Length: 254
Ligand SMILES: Nc1ncnc2c1ncn2[C@@H]1O[C@H](COP(=O)(O)OP(=O)(O)OP(=O)(O)O)[C@@H](O)[C@H]1O
Image 1 (tube, helix red, strand yellow):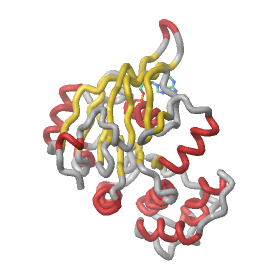
Image 2 (tube, rainbow, N blue to C red; image 1 turned 30 degrees about the vertical axis):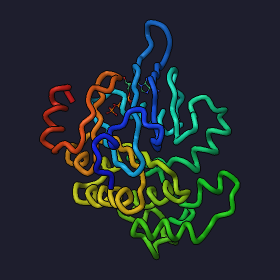
Image 3 (cartoon, rainbow, N blue to C red; image 1 turned 90 degrees about the horizontal axis):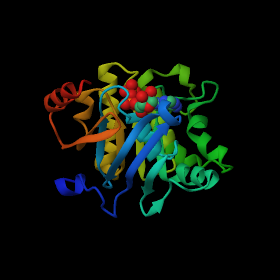
Image 4 (cartoon, rainbow, N blue to C red; image 1 turned 60 degrees about the horizontal axis):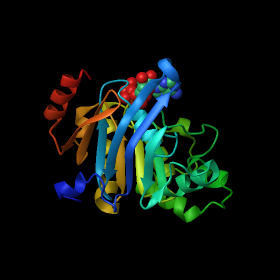
């Protein structure tokens, strides 16, 4: 695990797993435009776990989507390692996205008619690849679901479904895993199991993880907490306590 504060918070470090420079995202045009991001610069060191917090509407999901190549910034740049991805043609971006980043959603987003293994294989299949069974089984074992590959999502608990979604996000061995409120649909204990799993990926496999959360306790699993307000990065805290995060959030009206 990275313990050097300067490395955890590096802003322009060229070795960053992902970074954004002067990111802007406006929805709509003219006077009615919503400026969701208003110039956010941030870098994520490899093998670190970052929580993104802030009041509702502060731009957290927009930042995550822009960083993960799921939304296009209207200004600024996004880098995955040494590759600038914000201006790539859609097809090339989709190819790179599949191999270099993983994404986990609050609502799991699994296909109910498919088995667990088919869900994990799906991104590869959509890209025209033959499924690598060994890799799929390895990804499921890593999330604690060995032996469940023939089950359907409806036969699993919420926590197990989120584990399938994490296996799907990790099967291509991406450099960065993005998670948007991954515990938001789970009870507290199950949520903590998922956070333990994300933390273990960072500590044991050197995974880089960036997670949006509203929960200061969940943010306590991260090495670093970014705070957004009104489309701007307003704080960058290294290993704050849940109480410090809660206090800062309430100052921001979150
Ligand atoms: N597709 C869109 N079209 C128009 N406005 C949008 C769109 N997506 C987001 N916004 C606006 O951009 C701003 C930031 O939204 P975003 O979802 O990033 O915030 P958030 O911090 O993730 O909020 P929450 O905590 O409520 O999920 C909000 O004002 C939102 O209404």
